[in-house]
Image (cartoon, rainbow, N blue to C red; front, side, top):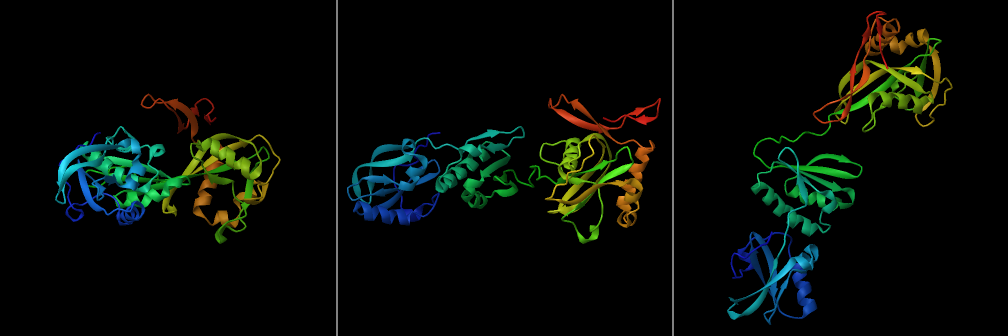
Length: 367
C-alpha cells in the first residue's frame, strides 16, 4: 500500500512520537562520516513517522538503518517547496513507497497465520512492520494471530512479546506465539494437554509374558518385571506405536490384536495429562535382543510368576490390568480393535477403536 503525506511541513523531534529505536547513534555516525551539520525532522506518512536528516545544503537523507532494512527499491523521493527552520527552498524528503504488512494467510476462523519463511531478517524492520501489520489486522477485524518464529530468528521473540504476543508452545526448531485481538478472553485453542503412552502385553503359546526391567526407573519400581512401554511418536497410530516399542526394547516382532484398557492420569509430566493404552499383542518371533540404552534385561516369564510379583499384587492399578488381561485370555472380555474409516468432514482416514463380537462363538474379533 502506498503511503501519502499528511503534511508537507516537517516537525521537530520533540513534537512527534515515532516508531522504532533511537537514532542518536546513527545521527552521530552521519555527522562524523558526512562532515556536515544536521538537524532532524520527521515526515508523517499515514501513521509512519520516518526521520530524515537535513544537511546545511538542504539535502535530506533518510535513516540509513531504515533504508537498509526495507530496501532501496521501496524508498521513494518526493520534492516539495516549503519552509524549514526559516529557510525557503526545494528539499527532497523520503517516504516508504510500498510498505507492506507481514506475509500471511487467513485461517478458517477469522484469524491470521504469518508466513514464517518470509519474515524480515532485520529486527528493526520486523518491529516496524509488525506494528503496522497489527494495526492493519485490527482494522480488518481479524481475531487470532499466529506467529511462528524459527530458532535462527529467536532475536525476534522479545520484539513480538513487547508488542503483546504470548507464548503458545515450542518445539526444537521454533517457538509459536499468539495475539488475540478482540476484547475478552482468548478463544484460540490451547497447547496440547496430553502425552500418549502405550504398553504391550505379549504372551506366547507357552503362556509366557514378554517382560523387561528398565535401566532407569523410580525406586518404587526397582526390581519389577514389567511389560514393554513407551510414548507414541508424532503422527503415529496407537497400534503401530505399541508394536514399535516392543520391537525396540526387546527385538520381538508382534502383531496388534486389541486395546484391552487405557488409563487417564493428570499432572504427570510438565503438568500435562497422560493417556496410557495397554495393548494385547501376538508374538511372531521369539528371540530376544535387548536395547542396551533403555533396558537392563528382558525375558519370557510364566504368566503365573508375572502375576505373583509383590509389586503387582500390592498395586491396585497393576492388579486390575492383570485381571482384565486374564479375562481377555479366557474370552470373558473383549477389547477394542482398530478400524480404518474415512470421514466426509475432512476426507481423512482415521482409526476408530471398538469391539466386535462373533455371536456364534462368543469370541472377540480383533485385528
